[in-house]
Amino acid sequence: MSTARTVTDTDGIVIDRMESGDTSYYLRVLSPDKGLIDVTARGVKKQGSANSAASQLFACSHMTLAQSKGRYYLSGSEIIRSFYGIRLDIEKLALAAYFSEIIRHTVTGEQTARDIYRLLTNSLYMLSEKDESKTLVKLVFELRLCAEMGMMPRLIGCDECYRTEKKMFFLIHEGIFLCPKHMDTRVVYPGPYTVMVTEGMVEAMRYICLSDAGKLFSFSLSDAALKVLSDISEHYLEYHAGKHFDTLDYYKKILI
Image (cartoon, rainbow, N blue to C red; front, side, top):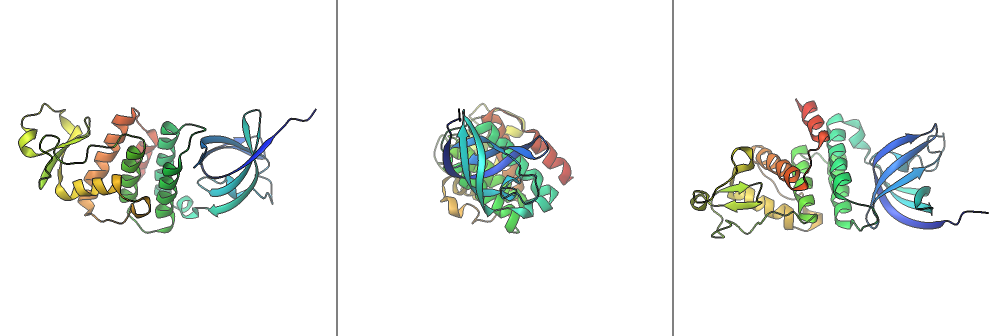
């Protein structure tokens, strides 16, 4: 008696893979319409396999999936982008692995993830094909993902008077800004979770969280400002997602 199968088509990015026997892989795939799914790619290690390219780490493909007993199997594929440049640079590869760990923690299966899929696609494109600062790409990915997941900071200005001054304080734990005047009246967390930022940095955070997805990387800041905002965004994501990401430690280690 044959097992009934359904067939579905979807785009997907391979964000993780594990070996399965001598010729196959288990793939973790981010799909815009299915969220995070596990896909078995049989025989893709064999020479001449039609699905070999689609099973590479960070490859973006149009996939035909057969589903049986709740499991997905890769039955056909057409490469959209391989993002091959990422695999040629250990720093880019480590940063992409960090993005993947974040997605594995924040996205679940069988949910729509169109905005996060587009964010990942654009971020991998910037890493692979463009000569953009990795600090910029990291900052944009972290902060925009927080916004897409409902963890966006309150960006209107000072949480008390709504003004944006030349110098502001960002309270990472609370996700708010305070002007110097109202900073003096608020009990705040000490240390790295309260950071002074400039008006330009506040505008950049607004832009990242609120701009059109196709224009996310169309702004510029000094290297020093990017470094401050990158530190803010990683602490903000870690605190509000409730997880420390080990791949970030590795990325920082290889930068030294």
